[in-house]
Image (cartoon, rainbow, N blue to C red; front, top):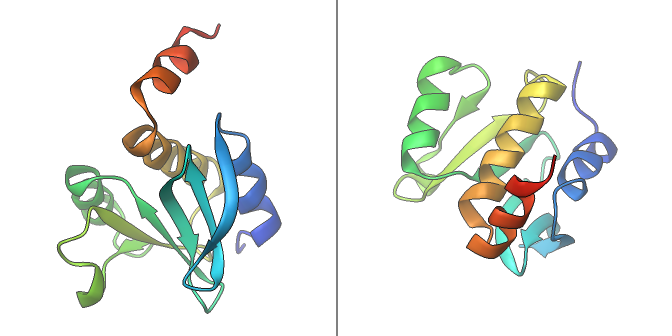
Length: 114
């Protein structure tokens, strides 16, 4: 089952300090002004800025869902096929992107929550 944009939006906006906007004309999400995810023009792939190590780990663990194109080599991002990722896995990847980009103060406040 493909994740809908509405579900993606709900997951992203549930994270503290996340704002919705656009990037390259497509829906995007930022944490305190820093980009961490955007939908591709086709509406079927999500770019998430998770860091080099996390990107490699995700791609090795599930290459059907997580991948890169030549354009994204050298960027700390991973591409996510919304047609194959599950809701819980997407929630985890969005949080990883959020954590990679959120300011330390926001991370500390979030990690203190019960």
